Image 1 (cartoon, rainbow, N blue to C red):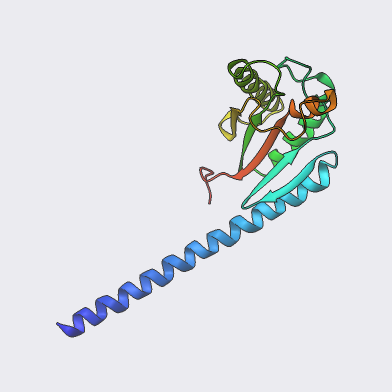
Image 2 (tube, one colour):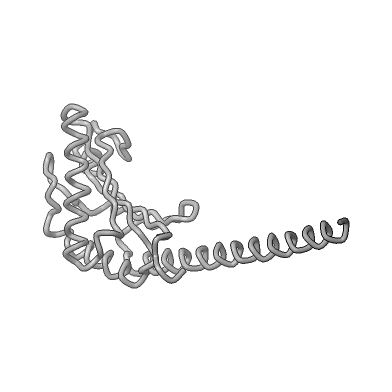
Length: 176
């Protein structure tokens, strides 16, 4: 009985070691993949602030005006920037993209929340048009809750009318 228990413990130890080794290899692959993704975004989107936050990549275009006041349609001048973003995403198929819409503080909370959602959705539509599969894109609206600049000046309000992009490792990707 003791020998059988010892064999069971030894077998269990081997299984745990193999499982943890496999999980570690997957984690290392994910980290390398996201580092490669970050590097390409940083290189090709020179007009963007590209930063690593944990195991994701945040992209913000602070100097580019994406939306006019109280509008949800992406301004046409921004289309080439979104096309470059889509091109890099296409090279990194194991990623998903959170598209987070924001507004300035003018208007009531309900209006701003709706406007921010529509901004995220219209940005998502441009990326889909540029060839990114809709299953990789997730859009959210935050209204005026997360300003990055003052809402006192026109310049600050313009910066707050934005979309932020968070690139995530896509666990639903087949092949990993």
